[in-house]
Amino acid sequence: EPGARMYRTGDMVRWLPDGNIEFIGRTDGQVKVRGFRIELGEIENAISELPQVKDRLVMVRQDGPGEKQLVAYVVPENGQVAEDPEQRADLLVQLRSRLRTHLPEHAMPSHFLVLPEFPLNANGKVDRHALPAPEAGQQVLRTRHVAPRDANEKALASIWSRVLGVPDLGVHDNFFDLGGHSLLGIQLLTQVKQEMGYKLPLATLFRSPTIAQLARELGMSEQPKVQLKNLSAIQPQGTKVPIFCVHGDEASYFIPQHLGLDRPFYNFFHQGEDGARILYTEVKDIAEHFLEELR
Image 1 (cartoon, rainbow, N blue to C red):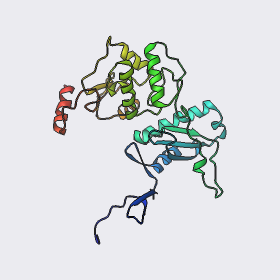
Image 2 (cartoon, one colour):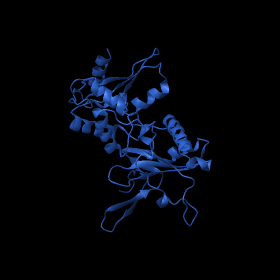
Image 3 (cartoon, rainbow, N blue to C red):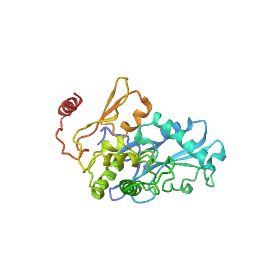
Image 4 (cartoon, rainbow, N blue to C red):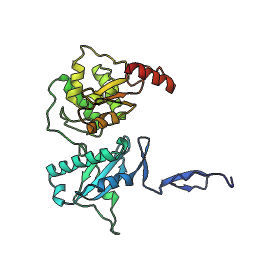
């Protein structure tokens, strides 16, 4: 209607003769991944602040069935870094460490590819279509490989490989450093329940994010059980004033890494993540329930 308020969405569309509107793309660098709106430029700027980086490009890819993923392409100042596995791994460690202090977890790229140079088209611009697709395991920060040693570790390694799309996992590789997030964590624990009979809350994965640690959690109980509380001690040790995070999700894993070992950290996970039904729907009731657990 004339004079009505309109919302500038940033979407580029085409009005078809039949009255339908066809989405073409965005007029800015904003994308939507896993329900979050993300500015690709913010990620690229954060990567550029690392002096070892000469050029960078971040894009959304969906090369197969499954959800869209953020992929970061990086050209190092020293071209030899792209060719040397150890130097390349060191650069990735620095990249992830820096981005975790500058970006929310949902804006962290799932894959990092280090290239000697970007492919260019006839106009001298980056040819996005020629950029390589990430291969399974290409984005990960791997630890020294230790193969699964018992039945639980072997079963968990098989489940992790399917969920993350990463082959040949070691028992000390970290779920979140492999590109995992809370939605994949739910899928993983669902398969653990179906195949191994253990029904675990999502908090367990944040507390024990490696295969070895999660297998140890299973071994501490003679039979499967469900933990029926929302409060979880992510980092219980320390003498400083503790921090309590509400519904931190992935943040409950990454924040303690920047607080030091002397700062206790606890997280209140969402209701229902422990396998129990949701009892409280009002904010006041949820707060009272959390305070009761805190006492």
